[in-house]
Image (tube, rainbow, N blue to C red):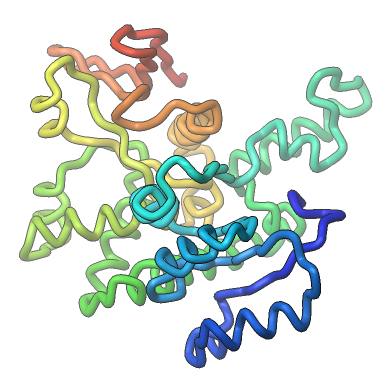
Length: 306
C-alpha cells in the first residue's frame, strides 16, 4: 500500500528456493532485469535470510530505498538497531482494532446510523469472539480452523525452526498454557512447576521466543523499585482474541478476560509500551488494577475492565 503507484522491485523470502539457492549477485542482476529502473526495493519476511542485516546495510550504503517487512519483533528492534541505527522508521501493524473492524464492514464509527446499530452490535460481538485478523473477517465460519493453523505455523516456523529448538513439545505445551491462562499472572518458576519442565532458564527463553513473532505479550506489575518489579509475576496477553476462541474457550465464561485482552491491545495501538509506560498493579491487600499508564515518571491513568 505504501508503494502503490511507485516503481518498486519485490523479493519474497518465504520462498524456500530463493533461500536455499541464495546468491546476492545473481539476485541483484535478476531484479535489474525484471524490474528495470525500480526506485524502491520491497523485502518481504527478510528475517528468513541468514545474515540479512549485513546485506540490508550494504544495500543502504548503495543508497537503495528499502521497505522491509518481517513478523519478528527481534528483527525490528535489536537487529535493525544494530545495523541501521537512526536510519529507519519502524511501523508496527497489529490485527484490526474494533474501530478498524467496523470500518471494514462499512460502519462509520463516528456516526453510527440507526439502521446500522444491529449490524454494528453483531460486528462487535463477533470481534470480541473471533478477533481482528483480516483473513478471519472474511471467513467467520472458518475462523477457528484458520486461527489454529496460524497458531501452529507461527510456533513451528517463527519460533522452533528459527531458534533450532529440539524440545518442540515443551514449546507447544508452554504456548497452549499461556493461551489458556491469558490475562493471569505467572512467574517462570510457576510455569516450570505447572508444566513439569526441568529448567527455569528454558522456560524464560521459550517465553521470550514466543514474544518475538508478536504472539504473546507480558505485562509487568507496577512498582517504583525496578528490581522488585522485575521479580514480580507478569501477566500474559495474546495478540488476537481469535487464538483464544480457536482453543475452545466459551465466550460467556471468559468475556471479562477477552475484554481485558482487547483493552491491552488497544493501549498498545495507542503507543503504550510494556515496562515503560504500561503496567498492572496489585495492592498489599490483593486488590488488582488491570492497567496503569505512565508518562515519564508520573502515573497518568488507572484502567479497570469490568
